[in-house]
Image 1 (tube, helix red, strand yellow):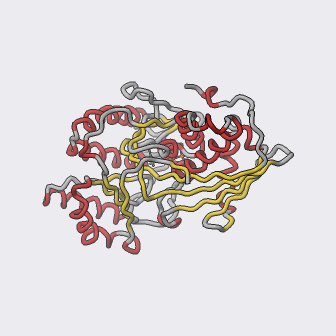
Image 2 (cartoon, helix red, strand yellow):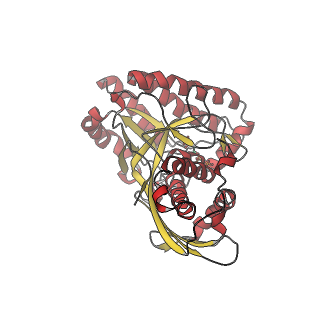
Image 3 (cartoon, rainbow, N blue to C red):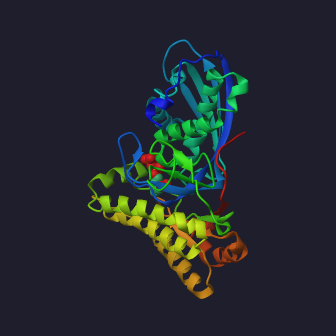
Amino acid sequence: MTNQDFIPKPYTEILENGSVSYQSPSNIALVKYWGKYAEQLPQNASVSFTLSQCRTETTVHFKKKNEDSFDFEVYLDGVRELGFEPKIKKFFERVEHYIPFIKKYHFVIRTKNTFPHSSGIASSASGMSALAMCLVAIENKLNLPKEQQAQHKEFGLQKASFLARLGSGSAARSLEGPLVVWGEHSKIEGSSNLFGTRYPYAIHENFSNYQDTILLVDKNEKQVSSTVGHDLMHHNPYATERFKEANNNLEKLISIFEQGDIDAFITLVESEALQLHAMMMASKPYFILMKPNTLEILNRIWSYRIKTGSKVCFTLDAGANVHVLYPDSEKDAVARFIKDQLAHFCKDGAYIDDFLGQGATVL
Ligand code: DP6
């Protein structure tokens, strides 16, 4: 597939107004995307668990208008959110070529997250993927008679991921589940830089219903945004090695998932998380997004694992929060461990229990 495949033929249906609603979840990368080039293309392939509980629900109302322009309003939890509008405008500019109808309509975008806005959890993956699903659904109405819209599902998901990627790279991985690859990789059939694809190989039952409890260490806005962080990889002396290492790690995951080798999974996933933060520390200028409590938590997880033989492990995104990953079979024990030993390192004791999910759905 190329960019060209996502440019639609002239629309055939006429639509004055209407509305569509979709929900889409967040995801947590196991092999990280950190470094991009050209128009939101990743320097290495990444893979993530799709989550369930941390979601964005978005309704887009559309109404035909006469003049060609970008025209929209965004509401978060029912309140107009002017702060979101520059990001959405930039997104609209990037995707216009692929969904030319967006200049012909006035949009009212109503969105809400199932997780608190101030939790420090990035809502860009769930938010951009939910919006992209809505836009693809509107385009389907303009392109296809009703009875053909369902057959179009597979391409619709690809296109939504393609559009979501242009809004935020990691959003390309939120449309499906439970495991999604984004970025071309010679060992992963069907993988693409342009959109995320469902992980195509065997996943051992040890990974069924894998759990992710997100410990909210810091709820403040990050000092360095992901976009700036990605950019700094252009001058990072370790970048080329890092991109190779990420692709090697993704290849290693293939047999880990097939054999259900959780010990190897733990080593690889924790190493990926620490490499991501090592890249930040090696950037010029350097920066650190972990907080003292992040490190306290990592040390407690390591001690707990040694003491109990548990298979609990961690990963990190571009921030101070810790994702605690563990098999479903350890749910009760890890819940006690988190409550007794980790919760007090969280801001206001807050954490969110999440688990693997299947991606975006219509509401
Ligand atoms: C550390 O997708 O937030 O979470 O494409 O600039 O929007 P933009 O960046 P973003 O970067 C995510 C980085 C990460 C790793 C990952 O999710 O793979």
